[in-house]
Image (cartoon, rainbow, N blue to C red; front, top):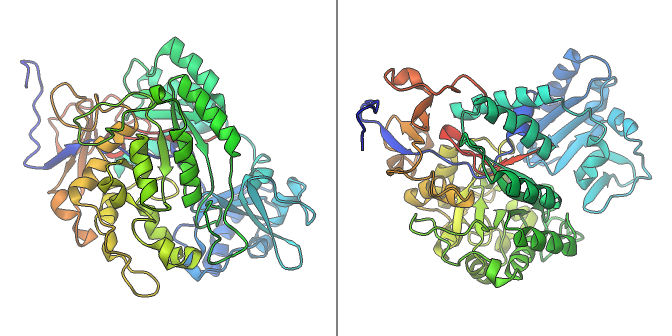
Amino acid sequence: MAEPLTQLVDLQGSFVTPGLIDAHVHILFGGCTLQQIDLRYVTSKTGFILEVQKAADKAAPGEWLLGHGWAEANWGGEMPSLTWVDPVTPNNPVMLSRMDMHMALVNSAALRLATLDDSTESPSGGRVNKDSQGHLTGMLADHAMTLVSTHIPKQTHEDKHRALHIAANHLLSKDAWDSLEAVYMVAADQGSLPMRIVAMVPLPTWRQLHTRVQQWGRSHPGGRLYWGGLKDFADGSLGSQTALMHQPYASDPSSSGIRLTPQETLQELVAAADMAGLQVAIHAIGDRANDEVIALYQSLPAERMPSSNNTTDGTRSLTTRRHRIEHVQHLSGPLALAALRDAGVVAVTNPLHLLSDLDIIEAKLGRDRAKPGLAFPSKALLKAGVAVAFGSDWPVMPAEPLATMHTAANSDNLTLPSGSLWGPGASVTPEEALLSHTVGGAVACNLESEVGMLRPGMRADFTVYQHSLLHSLVGDAALLPEVTATFVDGACAFGCHNFLSAPMAATATAARQDSMIHGLTANSSVGFA
């Protein structure tokens, strides 16, 4: 395949795969969280308060303190409240997001700025938590979070460019329209995107996106930035107990979750976007939310639906109207699997979420709904013939594709709080895991003709490892290989010192409200913004 002027690089017997594609990343938000209070590793109430206090000690009076990543399961299950943080933040408003981003703790200063008090009611699609005496606890879920977040000063374009730079460097080593036009496009024009980004914008803006596609096509001429997809939400999350379920939660029989977008609204928007030839991605966690989104996709006109031959073996190319469901975390049963396959839907799953939900899943849902096949059904989806792409959901979970594949390949051996194993029937094969992070991601992003495989005519995006990845995916995670280098368009973007003869990417030192990167070849090249 080498041409006379081709520069050859000796990879010294290393193991090589196509560039890994993270099919679901919040890149600018992730870059921002790297500058916030990191609560992911806090394991006690005392530790929680200490991290907030350290940030408050450095902050100017009136400055917002933002944080992320806490999970109540890490310290026994007690939900934090404003009484934890009020004593150490008398002069600063605070907003601290739970790891799933569907719940947040705010302090009294933030509540005052937002003019919220004990008389405040929960908005549609959200929940304002109160204690038994009817007093605000500081906990807000889903749409209720916007009651406070709208009072946080907006980021400048300079802030967002800094977040893109921080996020891109982080990923390479291991407001959506504003982000697309003022951040991603500028970086693409400057040639400073070190990886491929597939940017999505809110579903209600489908007309604006349709106009853009008609005028500019679906990608930047530099080959690093793509658009043409739309994102919306059907429900919340399991941990925040806002995932929409058919039956009430075992932990709270009064609740079956929250529908974030009215069905009729979602139906109208999806139908219009589909008719315009745009891709739609809907967040659905609960079994009822997934059934409703599947039914919505099934109701679309047959001539606008993708082929049911929706596989990720690289042998078929689907239409650009290839709709997605993000997370697909809980299903109602085999009929849902068949319906997903027949509707030609791409399921973007997040195996690492199992690690964070393992301690709560039986308590929230009961054993029957928490078992493999119904919960975290990557294996069941693959067996049913549904196209599957893996995503990290960073910064909700770490952007670590090797850990994602290892978790998916070892799910049978994960231990529940009861001491029993979560499997059998949950683990995918190492080959299925790798395909879901390469070809599957390319299919989800409509880029299977460009990336996801190593063959003539494809873009030269690949990842280099110190030893065999496939042989290491089952068993001890400590034996996973290190990523020694990543190449984008044939040029080294990370680890270049390991292969001094490799051509250097021009953007190698450049960049590594919320846009989603559904298909970020992190550790090599694509993203879903």
